[in-house]
Length: 114
Length: 109
Image 1 (cartoon, rainbow over the protein chains, first blue to last red):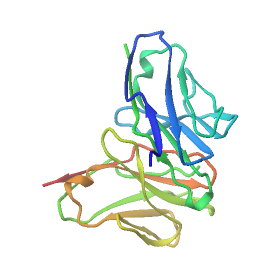
Image 2 (image 1 turned 180 degrees about the vertical axis):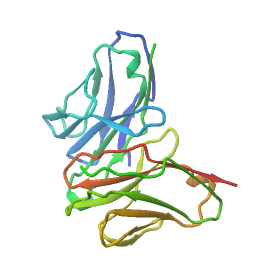
Image 3 (image 1 turned 120 degrees about the horizontal axis):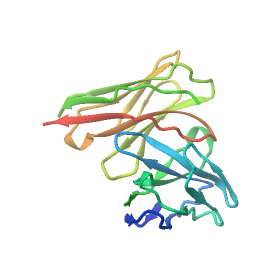
């Protein structure tokens, strides 16, 4: 019963490096999203996807790219890491079915950019 | 999307009932109210959801008055393990979830 799986749990990057945060879900959810959480703040939406092949920007998309080639996977790419991207990143998925809709979150990736 | 306002922090003692109130003055007819709980170093998790009146599950109760402009999450007899951040969200089906800063609940022994 895996749910939403994120890897890695921790990552340290140097400014300018690139990397991909992985997210996979095994609940056949149509909707997947990426949030970042900074100290003392709520979660801010980076990108989201309502199905394979469909992605869109959230509140803070700059510096991040996404793609959705399968229902299960929704990777988040940092093309050129910056210290401002130091944060905890959460992936989430849901059925997107109105009243009974719930977000299921992964355990997060703590990213530090030096 | 309806904006929510909730206290930034609350303190309680073990065994007490905790009530966290959320204001959502511009809630729309199709919106429903959802609460999430987040422990340190974990992603938020769903705890309860409602549209009107009262909803109760094994974790909490949610009270929503007739005008739906506010809601109250009630945690009965809290323990140290209930120390967490609680988020109130107003959600329209099929739309993105917007998380505010939440309420940081500290349960003291």
